[in-house]
Length: 546
Image 1 (cartoon, rainbow, N blue to C red):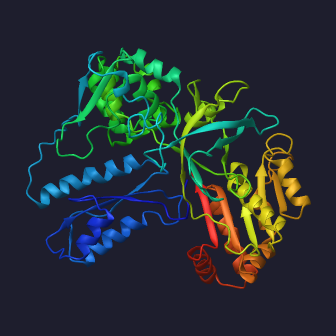
Image 2: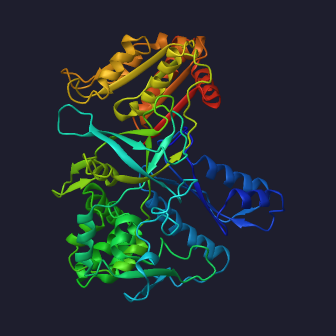
Image 3: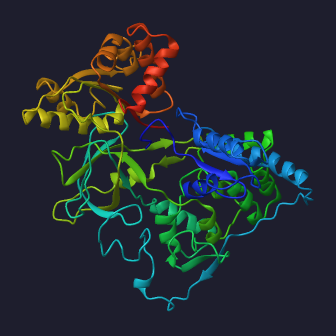
């Protein structure tokens, strides 16, 4: 989840990767002899698209360095790898020409890691990684502090369905953190480490002809590298596929290029090779065969039947399985020892007729506490956020959170209600929430209506499909421009958005700009500057995802 409107950006720079330490070192020393290029990794759904890359490219030139090739910008909302390949294909010839380097034009595929297969007697069972993130036995012998490399194994003490009908599912999950010493605040995120579906894992074993219980290690061929393994080793193939590599994502084109070498059929080779190229025909085929059809690595191997890759090479190629982040939907004022999660279970039918499922939500849906049985457990840690309530409870707030975008605002409402119950003055609290149907997916309906009866919130709810024409939260919000300006313009209040970054958040932002112009009497330029100032003061905050 993104905590502000600025997306984190990674920078590729020649001849170094820029980190804050390297950057500080360079700006304190002459850059006249430095030759550089920058490729930024960003996402256009966020306001400050590739801002860091643009800044670094400009600043390096200002400090005397020589740009070898023009700035490249990758958009993760589209196809960031395609952006990079397009840029790289022009970059290398330019560099070769500039420095009189003769290019052979041949592409050489080399592996970064070498395989070591271990005999059954080589390691004792307690010397083999079984899903730990970094430290061996860290999930069995837990000790704080808990973080990304040392997650806490939390009990799932509550796991219930929130939807009352329809064909979709939304879970309310409560995680017990009482023994962790972890502390959270309303607005923080919880990171959940998922486990891949066992059926997909078994299927990959079948398609590659591998023994999933064989223990192996992948060792970096660069002995000077600090990254000795792509994931904790030694481990079994079953553990690697279950805990360490991403097998449900659509494979990037560089993976398809590597798979070419494992095809025995010439037509299969041509197809994979074409999709790995930067030609218009190759891009179109990749878009239709992989992206539009939502094919993961299992589906690719099922449909390119002559492709029989080594499983160890697949484990090297596939990206590392990442934790999934969820906005915490509770307040520690009421629930100091549990973290609440609100998550829609991802499940959909693809154009090929397959059923794709979300990794984490599918796993959570299958792990429901049962009487007289140990609670299911899941590795988690807390990620701090800047998505915060005002320090003064009397400050008015306006929140826009359709669907599971309601999650952090449930925590906010709990916190404001607690403050009121303690006798503290609480400012106006306005919530805009939306779903499809009142009688199906109006999550936390009883809680919200009780908050409203108690005077803790003013509710504005849109049910998009309960009438012939669709009504969204943005329609309701646009009718209340006076209210928006009253809160953010007259009473120094805070404005919050949580949910879809690509459409909803953009529409809401435009409505706020409209309120500043029409009710606040500002020009378009002045309205934009006013909103920028609110953002810099953390009075306009967004917790959005694309």
